[in-house]
Length: 313
Image 1 (cartoon, rainbow, N blue to C red):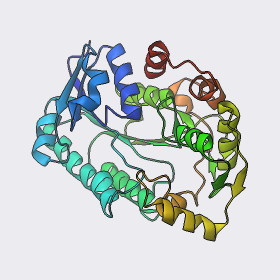
Image 2 (image 1 turned 45 degrees about the horizontal axis):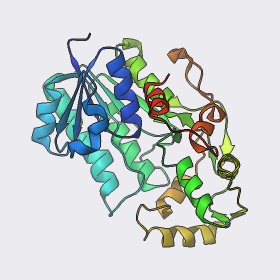
Image 3 (image 1 turned 60 degrees about the horizontal axis):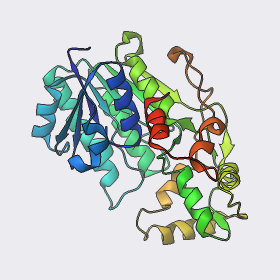
């Protein structure tokens, strides 16, 4: 067992729970801060996990947490802004505080979750804020590794499950950006890639794009979900004007389901030059090998299946 701890910001979330399970299985001590312990109850019983109720946006709290860790993983991110300025607060300002705390604490390495197409000059506020965060990490003087995944899928995802829910309710699917391209990557593969570089000095000061083995249009993904769920609905592609109108309306709903910033992000295809980088030593998991287990009609969602998905087995 490692004598040092790994601090995982966002450890109770979608990717985080998979990564924490892998780290625990390899004998590492893990610290997972969360605003409410109840949100991380699925981690509390893991033997080497310390779930700490804390506000990571508080600089004093970050300072205390980083002093307990040799490795820090930042998985915190949002896809939509509940209010203007949240992308900057969550993606940029938090990273600025985290970099300072890691430097003061002498953290040996920082692993940062970014996104494909992250760019300070990108087409959306989401991609620009992710790009600004990358720049902060890359110029920090720390030992860092940055990951840039395409859309991530898995049992608890908010992407394929969203379309599954819509197709159960709607007689047809009006679809914005139907031709946008994605190369979905399995959440277990993302967690495995993060774990693989924790002790690998050759991965320092490197950016890794993470993608699955196949490129799909958004329309193809929605159609595939319909086939799996048994709710195959007609798909009506929307033009640019109607897409903007739809997003403007949906922004007012809880969630939201879609925003104009999401549309702007999809102006650039979320695809890689290849698939999983050879460095990691494993092939990317196909969407078709996983999605039926949680989307197909009659799929069994047992606790055992959930554990297997989280542990990457």
